[in-house]
Image (spheres, one colour):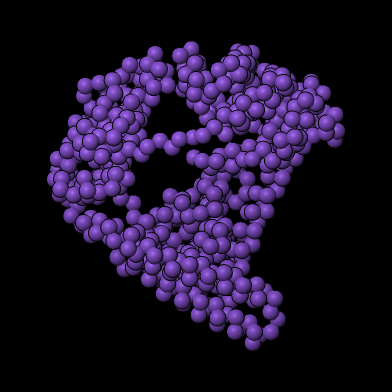
Length: 551
């Protein structure tokens, strides 16, 4: 591309790889025709950015990120899209993008809606349309959720991960209108159901998830993915109504404990099992299970395998055990936590605290998780002293510092900014709050604009919106100046990331850093540390430096 030519960017997106709807190529063709009619081909070149099979809920899309990076470089003259919702379905993200384009002097064109960002009315109309685009997305999502809930209340199996003891089978039927319909139902898996019965009976016998986990591990039982059954998975299985025979006893039990029951009592006749939905709230770590009041419990089409008496007794025991006092484990200073692997079985070696030394430090060792859970029956890997391994690995990493960062001196400025970010946090928070308040005021003005029929009032509203947008630009500029991160979201290569982390590793000061920060630095540098009982082999994340993958 010649240096004196500017780029007209075409952005296209489609949520799914399907033949339905407007294809990526059709969007490109329409945009190219618009550019040919309105821009000079001698002064501009066209570059296409296409994200296919990706939702427009946010900007975390590969080609969108590439587009933002090119905008930051100053290569883009105008951005052309087929329709507003191809760029974003979020009002907040779209508003930020418009401000970002205005800051860089980039014209935005939506071909099908014929919007021009150079006029106040054009900007206002774009924001109004983005509001409706988000409303459409949320309405579609709500409609889909309602339909799924309706099917769940009918006892249908809606797919997803099939519970142990069953497999899913798709069947075709003819409805009352003569239309062919297909649905998925649960069919019994005899071998899996025997294991489920064993898990329920064994839990009632020993009364502990930890002991049940150890028993199943030593007995050689594994999940479909080849992993041992953990406590969380076992608890999920023991509290899943899918295994329970749907009779009046479990109906009374659930009604007493506030379960969300969506079936008549008459259907609890002992002939089928139960189906429960909305149990999981989608969170990754804590409080992943919704309260039973929010569950959707209905009578399913499959056969239950656990008698209601047994299932209810198990629920009471699980509930009683959850009320037992929980002692928070002592926090160790293990900077390699989650990174040390057992060479024998491949399991993670987790830090286990033992005692407090005379100098006040907490003693800990890295212990194989399989060895600990199986009580030494499945793995006998010797523990390794935590402080000793941490110090040895730190020394090895520090020795590599000069070898890898000699070409990355420019990163020192970045590190200095990161160190200052804590001091700037409070100021940045105030600026962010003001920007949020301005966004709320813009939304109110947009509502007033939609109701206004007076030209003078409309002009006053538009002037006020322009004033707020100018204030937002100043606040955004101030926030960027004080922020430790660049808005362009520069993607650092693995070698640069390693170098940036190693700039912190100084023999004199590294040990003075808080354990949490040392752990975070090690996570950026180290892929894993494999312990074989005598030697620890270090594997680094830096793909650019294969000669230092182990030490």
